[in-house]
Each structure stands twice: as structure tokens, then as C-alpha cells.
Image (cartoon, rainbow, N blue to C red; front, side, top):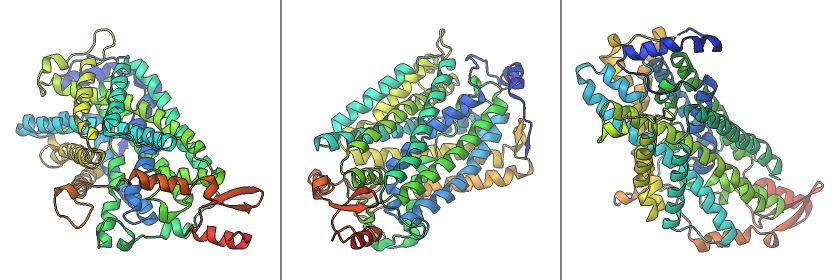
Length: 534
């Protein structure tokens, strides 16, 4: 592995060489280079949005294997995703063109370049917009939980879609900013993400009266008998548990799409991809471990007021058990909502660069219109609203069925995005090796092995994302169905059971703790016996 590291001051001095590199790729510089390596890292980490994704999708692991699946499937998926990230980092260092994967595919595919680029372009446009839609869904989920806890009423489908539409329009308006303002917004978003994750890591364990043992967190496996999926094979169950991390670890190709706006892109873009992936791995793993230690009632984790969102349920239970009120849990939800909105703006900025670059190469209808940048900001404003329009169409199923949107649309676009990641790597590995001159970041003799593992993982993850996760299968309606939404009456009943007046008061040291009657959590039962509160 070879890496020509430049000092930050030297990256600015190599601005002219970046424009020369673009001219060699037959691309004219149209945007402003105002994104530093730190801004690129902040933007990429925000687009991955590991904190919001873990909180909203932890149930996808829990019901398919429990704590063991949550932790170890996360580690395995992150390990293999690293090879995709390294492969992209090497390619963008040599081919720093906006649009990333579709440009690379057309470059490496030789005489098949136009077709390869066209297919990859459409897949990447749809997949990247899907990332924005998934971030919006995380925010809507938090808003819906606040509404339910305050009013006892779920948001209807049209209400959810209305919120979704409002957030997209707001994000589109905020994307009328210049690249320099986008860099400042990325720094602010990074700050919000870190505050939310660190606050969760420190606050929730401190609030939770009871903590699970290390043997439970790292060794407890919920087999098929404990799963509500109907799957009767533990190996297949573990495979399904890996889907959560596959959903989360997307969007790390953002520096490739913004490479024409990054100062010293051939060095800074690889740095942003690798460091953002590494930081996401660490933050996500710490967050999962912290949440698992803070589980108050394992038996009721999927049946609580959070409607199956296990991450939020753990936080609600911790605050409710400590204070006997959901008020602090509601206040906590403000942080994920604000973070999601900031992430949406940055995701949409990335989507616009993909669509703009694709239109610039005449890959989209009305390319002459969408392939232009704004004269005032030097950013692709028209492509921003094209991305907003695609996202609005993509979210239409939400107005009728939340499950259709979550487990149908988002699952499909995740597969599409994974495939778009793998196509250029596959062409580079096979027929395009002679067409590639490495940049400052090169994998050297490890390049072929890294590319091969990356393609292998794209095939495996795409196949896994297309497998049914509910049995028995009696029709296509059982595909891509995640947790089952609980009826409003059931959730209200659960909420009442957790209220202050229905809890047994236990004196634990100098603090008052409130435990649900009949809890199956062993440490709670033991403490109840010791305190004589039964």
C-alpha cells in the first residue's frame, strides 16, 4: 500500500494539478473547490448517519439472533465493507470525477463503457436518493414516537408523507447554498452527530438503573424459537441479522461525487472515505454495545411503545424505569430529529452531484437542463430539485403503508446501491486494469485481492438483501417485512403498564427506581427479592 501524503497547505498548492487531471479526463472544471479534507470527512460521516440508523433499526438484529447477532454481524459486515471503501478510495484517487461509480464503470469497461456507465448511473442515482429517503424515515419515526407518547395516536400515512415532503422541500431550499457554506453545514452536522452519539453513550448507561451482564451482551443468542420471524434455521437467522449493518453502511462514496469540489481531491477524497468509514464503525459498535447493556426488559423489547424500534425502546425504558415518566425520553428524541434533518441536507447535496454529473454526460432525460450549475453559487441547483422529485415519488408508498416503504422501497434501493458500488470494481478487476493509473493513494500489490473481496461481498450482500425474512411464504407480500407494527390499543396498554402508578417502587441505594411488575429481567427480580418489595 502506497500513500503520498501531502501537508494540508500543499493540497491547496496542487489545485492546478487537480484541474489538469480533470482535463485529462475530458472534464471541464465548473464548480468551486471549497471543501477541505475535514469538511469532506464531516459530510461523509453525516451521510452514513450511523447514530440515527442504529437507534431506528436495531430491531432488525435483535429479532434475528439477539445480542450476539447485533454485535458480531455488525463486525463482520463492517470488515467486508472496508474492502469496498478501500477500492473506491483507490479509484477516486486516480479518477477524481464527480459522479464516481458511473464514470468509473464507463472508464474501465472499454468498448462496453457507455452501457456500463448508463446502467451504473441510473442505479447510483436511485440508490443515493434512497439513502436520503432512509434518513428522512429515521426522522419521521422519531416524530411519530413523540406524537404517540404525547397524544396516544399514531401518525397516519398521509401525515407521515406530509412530514416527509416538508423535510425534502426544506432540504432542497437549504441546498441553494454555495460549496463553502456546504462545508460549514457539514461541520455543524458533524458536531450534532457526535453530540447525539456521545450523549447516548454517557447518558443512557448513567440513567439506566439496571445493566445486563457482559455474558448476556456478548454471548446471548436468541435462537429461532425466540424469533417472531418464523425462520427455523439459526444460520439463516444470523444472515438476516446482518441486514441492519448493510442498510447503515451506505453513502460512504460521497467524496467521490463531490471530488470536483474538494481541495486536493486525489488525496483528500480517499482520506475522507477511509476515515469516515472507520469512525462510523467505531461509533456504531460502541452505540450498539451501550444500548445492549442498558436493556431493562428483554422480553418486551419488541412489544413496547416504540413500535418495535428497539434502540428507542431501550432509551424509553431506561428513562421510564428511573423517573417513572416518558418526558425525558421525548426530550431526547429532539436530538435524532435535528441530526436527521442536517444529514438529509447533506445527502441531498450528494444526490444532486450524482444526477448533475450523469446529466452532464447526457445520461438523463433533459440532460441539457439538469447538467448545468448555478451561475451564482457554482452548484447544481437544478439537479437538487430533480433529486427531490425522485425522492417524493419514491416515498409515495408511505402514504398508504409504512411497511411497504420501509421494507419494500428502501430494501430495493439498498440492493441497487450495493450493485452500483460493485460494477466499477468488477470491471477494474477484469478488463479495466490496463486503463487505470493509480493516484496518490494506491493499494499496490493488494489491489487485486481487495477488489476481489469487494466484488464478492457486493454479490453476497445483494443476495442477502433480496431474501425473505418472514416465514412461511404464501405470497410476495411476505418479502421485506421487518418488525410487525403493534396495534394502537396494544401500544397504549403497554404505555399504561410503564407509567408511574403501575410500577413497584424499589429503594436502590439512595435512588428510587421503578420496575415493571413481573419483569423477567433476572437482575431486577433478584433486587426485588433482596429489597423485600415483592
